[in-house]
Image 1 (cartoon, rainbow, N blue to C red):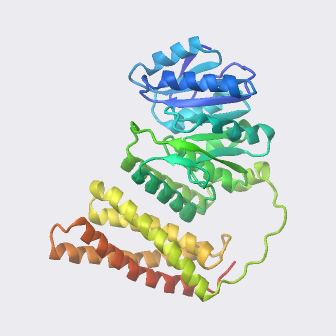
Image 2: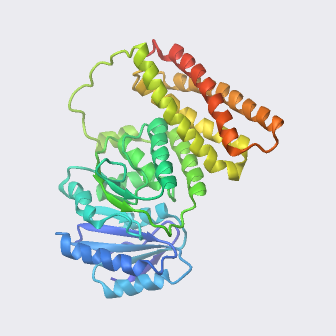
Length: 408
């Protein structure tokens, strides 16, 4: 299969190959790892995958010999093609490759092959059968086996916790580079996904969930690539901006979710049961659990952004993100409220609590820095934890007063 090039956001159509599965490998400057990855994947599919397949190497404007290596692989291995884009962005590459493919099931995986390929058939089988619409590999299931550093583990779990709180995500692992989607579903969702980078996966999954699509999760064995070139801080900030943008679009109704749900979603089997009021003891326990998770997420975001932004801006960013996630989580888990009714009012109350928390934490930081110009990082974190505890008490009182008798 010959290589072909594409402009920034469009590609030439691929000829029909009869492949059931198209596995896309997005790459940028991967001249060393690309050959072993594609040969190993091609051998695995040839031996273990019972349907016709193709492999598409999506080159994201590499400036080394990646494209040359890809073209050599396309000439060497049957069913391997090359898609060249003149702009960077993993999301851009996936969108272009998936949009051009004629296969009914589309997948992608990272070039480092961190995920064990034994999970590939379980990933795509429910899509081939029509049982599910999307499938993701998850490193956070109890049966997953994962080898990676503590820093990446904590950041990954904090990110998925924020997604659950801020965007009500129900999938467990948004960032694992091992996903698949039915082509008909991709055709409807991809035009709505705005991100062209690392947030692409999350945005696609949130839209799919809101459209009522079935997302299949496969526990995976996953080994961290020690040579990963991902800038964690830059990626985290970009993801936070993406969450904010997508959250606004969902709140304002800018996305055609009703139409998507009507066309693609699955009808409910029965009406949901009536909500049961949650008593004060359970509210306190659940609020405390949400508070602990929010505080951990806050500290992670503060530590991750403090070096680049400074203490006060990092505090503002971390507190704002976790405040939105905290309100959403408490609304659902602590006070037993679901649906959109009064959601705007509840978030206003959450922002009021955020303002009080900002005043407490910023004031505490200001006092600390006035007393000691360059305080030790543990002392700074200890002061923030104490201030957050005080803000937490005020948050519970405000939210309970606002939500206790306003269940939808």
